[in-house]
Amino acid sequence: LAMGADSAVHLKDAGFDGLDPLGTARVLAAAIKGLGADLVLTGQQGVGGDNSQVPGLLAELLDLPQVTMAVKVEVGDGQARVEREIEGAREVWETSLPAVISAQKGLNEPRYASLKGIMAAKKKPIEVKDAAALGLDAAALAPRATVASLELPAARQAVRMIEGDADTQVRELLRLLHEEAKVI
Amino acid sequence: MAAIITFAEHRDGKLRRPSLEAVSEARRLAGAGGRVESVLVGAGADFAGLAQELARYGADAVHVFDKPELAHYATEPFARAIAQVLTDQKAQALLVPFTAMGKDLAPRVAAKLGAGLVSDCVSLVVKDGRLEARRPLYAGKALATVRFESEPQIATLRPNVFALAAPDAARTAEVVARTVDASSRAKVVEVKATASGKIELSEAQIIVSGGRGLKGPENFHLVESLAQALGAAVGASRAVVDAGWVDHQYQVGQTGKTVSPSLYVAAGISGAIQHLAGMSSSKVIVAINKDADAPIFKVANYGLLGDVFDILPKLTEAAKAHLASKQ
Image 1 (cartoon, chains in turn yellow, purple):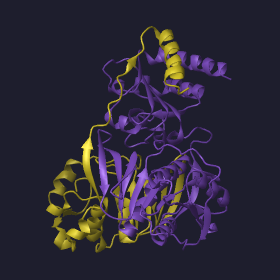
Image 2 (image 1 turned 120 degrees about the vertical axis):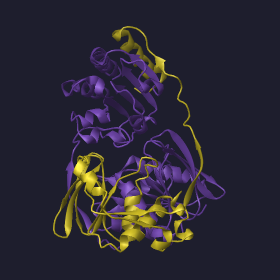
Image 3 (image 1 turned 60 degrees about the horizontal axis):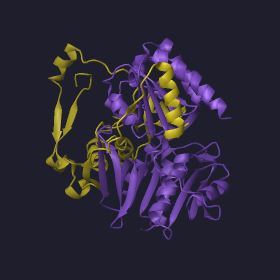
Image 4 (image 1 turned 90 degrees about the horizontal axis):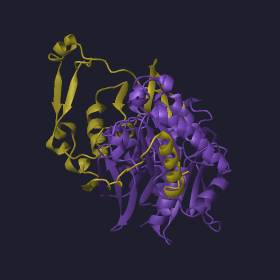
């Protein structure tokens, strides 16, 4: 709100704890459906799961076109032109609106919340909705995949520090990469 | 297990390597007697040839959607095509490479079918008739074992992690011509190649990556020269991308690319957790840094404590000589 949003909806329910991406998308879709959005903007992925799923799941549930991993967006009359990063290239897409567009790093520089913005945020409306208000029951939210266990990644073997001056280090490294690691 | 479907991504008339990794893994999971079928979507490629290549890596059948309107990737028709095959074949599972296309496509299919989707899997097994996946969480700080609770089960596979099957020239696949509504509300209108001629990061077997230790953009050529000498792709840490030395497409890390090369050389990179998230599944890691406490040394196989300005040029010359002597 301090960065410029006019209003907010907080989707809050004990049943939202432990949602999988499809459950999250269902909650969001239920909340967004009635709002008459022309454009739905999301991040590409959350830092915990790094799933990159919610934008696409949400677009399908809302029956909207999607353009993901956007690094440039130009909105026109009923359509948007979006540049998207793929391996070794940028695709330029045109989509009708409404649409779901997910932001990749590099889309823009996030603005700092100004003091004026922070003060204004305190007066902006925040609506709170729970699962019942959204018409969602436990079955709709049940995860389709669950984390059965978590472990630390296998420890990599300890580093072999290569000693000596730069010439020695370089010579020894190439020898090891060729003879021991066999990667060159 | 009932049939496993794989999505095969192709570009410029060739199957992309992660597509072969997916079909190889599907065959491994299905066993010798199980059913593996792949899906090809596009226009005008030699689909018969691509289908037989998929067969050599394990496919029993390949469903081909060949229509001029499908010449470029488009989310809606491609998702429709895959969902159609999954439903018609009453398949239990779908494997999709976790590439830019796969990231865009798999969730659309999952939501269409109300299916579970597990992203960025690094290993898969069949347990009690269902897939169980392992995948990194929290920028690679943990490894989660994830169980599917329903059918169908969709998994996206981290590229360069799953082994290719030994191709069997005697295997053939039935080719099934299919059609789908190709309409799409979002369309590709232009493709701008950004890494023309250069080796693409996510497919490279050797990567030389540079970080803040290079001190300034005017020194980044030391990284590029070593990469050239090794036939490697160039990578960068977030710090130097944010500082504007190189474009974001070179960034390796949580908000950049995840890579799994055979060899990753990290020069002047401290090894922040978000960077490690992008490269810790590299087979061999070499770290060059003057700070003995740099976290990168905790994941490296070989460490060179020293000055990048001294080491990189010497390593470049020695690499050129080494590779020349192997000709």
